[in-house]
Image (cartoon, rainbow, N blue to C red; front, top):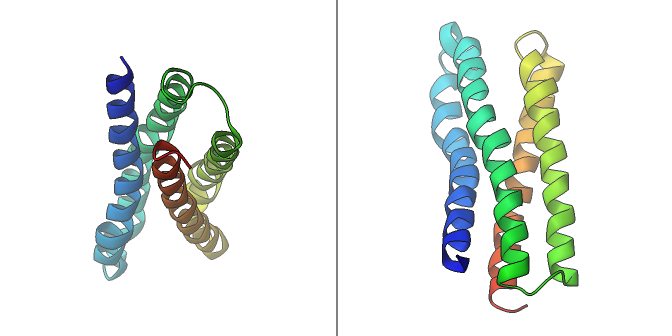
Length: 140
C-alpha cells in the first residue's frame, strides 16, 4: 500500500508540474505568434488542463500526500506541515489563475498579465513542492 501511494503521488506530481512546464515551454511559445487562434486555444487548453491538472490532480495529491504522511512518514513533522501550507498556497494561486485571471484573459490585457504572473508563480511554487517532497523523503 505504501509503495502504491508513493507511486501515485509521484505520478500525479509529474503530471501537475510536467504539464505546467509543457505549457510554458511548448504551448505558449507556439501560440504566441498565432494571434488568430491564440485566445481560443489558450481558453480550450486551459479549460482542459484546469480540470485534469488542477482540480483532479491537486485533490488526488492531497489525498495521497495525507496517506504518505501517515503510512510512510509516521505523522506530521514541521517539514511536512510547511509543505502542506505551501500546497494550500499553490491551490489558492491555481484557483485564482484558473477561475479568475485565466477566464478573463481574453477580455483584458490586465487579466492576461495576471494570468501570466500567477502561472509563473504557480510553476515556481510547485517545483519547490517537488523539492520539499524529495527532501522529506530523504529524511530532512
